[in-house]
Amino acid sequence: MRTALSIQSITKVYDGLRAVDSLSMEVRAGTIFGLLGPNGAGKTTLIKILTTLMRPTSGDALVEGHSVLTEGTAVRRIIGVVPQENNLDRYLTARENLVLHARMHRMRRREFTPRIDELLELIGLSGRQHDFPDTFSGGMQRRLVVARSLVHTPRVLFLDEPTAGLDPQSRRALWEYIQSLRSKMTIFLTTHYMEEAEELCDRIVIMDHGASLADGTATELKDAFAHSHLYELEFRANTDRYEGVLRSLPCIESLERKGNVFRLSLPAEEHLKPLMDAIGSADIKRICLEEPSLEEVFIQLTGRKVRE
Amino acid sequence: MFRGAFTIWGRDMRVLRRSLFSELLAVIAYPLTLYLAFGVGLKGYIADVDGIPYSLFIAPGLISMTAVSAAFEESAWSMWFHRRVQRTIEEYRVNPISVYDIVIGKIVSGFSQGAIKGMAVAGVIFLVTPFRFPLEHFLVYLYFIAFGSMVFSCCGTVCGTVIDKPENIGRVQGVVIVPLIFLSGIFFPLSSYPGSVLPFVRMIPTTAIFEGARLALLRGVMEPEYSIILAVTAAVSFGLAVWIFNRKIEE
Image 1 (cartoon, rainbow over the protein chains, first blue to last red):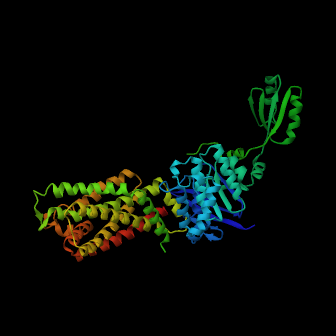
Image 2: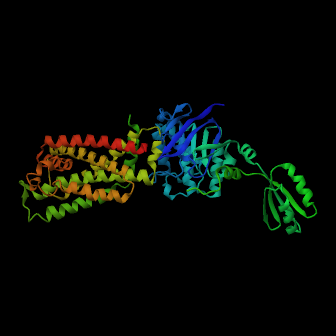
Image 3: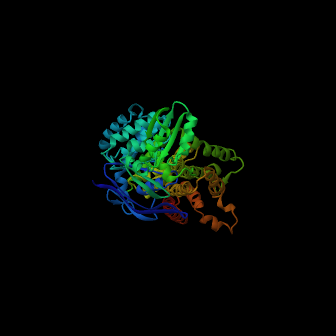
């Protein structure tokens, strides 16, 4: 498969801080690529470099073969950008916002008129096309920003936290819309929502302190970083006695209790048998294996400390 | 070339057109009040200045003042608003247009607004007062209005580019722009300045705008010294505005 994005040893230093640190990676064309990381990990800086808003301190990146350093205009011609904050023009109507974008891309009226009609219909704003964005809900504004980024049919679409601040319904509607773009273009997405990354992305990179920490599909990441096996165990009776037994077992790495339910982790599957031998089956109401979540992988890699 | 600048200018003119009546009403009120207060109110006390009736003496300056103030305000506030509040500058920058397109579009918008508003004030003064001038004088006067608006539009663009806090734009207007305008002889002749200071006052670009504009409109004279100062200032301020915007964006 063709490479849509090629990031080559990109470093960005601000005031001595390395926001992006010798990052290299490639993104295949026609896929949805997710970049995860805590606040200040370098995600937005990387998007700004890839969309030519910022120059890297060193390194280069190719977008569909065009260098962000030397072919900025060519790069901007083939990309669409949805920034973190809505930057719609509140003095122009919804339709005029799209027309302005089309004109910046040197599209002719006969080209952009049907395209804008189609996009407005698609995002459900046809009836509000002559209204100003200030009168729209957050979800409608976000959909309009996405539509604006698609007017010129970009080959690579950058979405920087596209669903931040949206209610679950608007978020799901936007997901469906992003899903519908799959294979029509390459999508580079940053998000804080693990569920969003799992739902949408073909490939995920977790980054922190400007560097890539993990790379793969959601399943691969969970398999690779889920070192322990999590079980949930519920007893019918004698829970206090069983807690004592469980705490005495050396194979249990961690143990949490909530009423009659225990959540415990074992280093490997083979420790399950000694555990069952120790507690028997008389009072067990339920035992189940918990799938590791992407969020656990994320926390494991980036830590629990809240970032400024 | 500069198609992006034209698109941005077109956007600004569309927005202006929507609120043209209220904009013009607001912009006409201030100079017209000054004209009535000074031109009519002081008519009995100041007969004429350098042989020109006082109400005629101040009219060209008031028109020019409206034009350059509007150019400054539009450029400064528009640039600041689009950069800091609406963040549309960021949207412009991910399109296949250059940084020069953005800054030139914004400068030309400021200049256009200044020219439109100046002409509106001229029209009203012409309608409600006995102030009259020959058409050929007006054509010379346009040179000063155009370059004056360009200079102030560039200054406004620089302010809107480098100043992050809106109150500081107001301070620049109060401490730099308004004194420069008022001390350039809108309401009094330059001969009021001491002889030792006068050569320096004549070198100030705002003097070139207001004094040059008055000589052009009332006497049809294109003063070479003023026209050269103004053209050079416009070129330098344009280059500076583009350079500063480019550098700020690079940051």
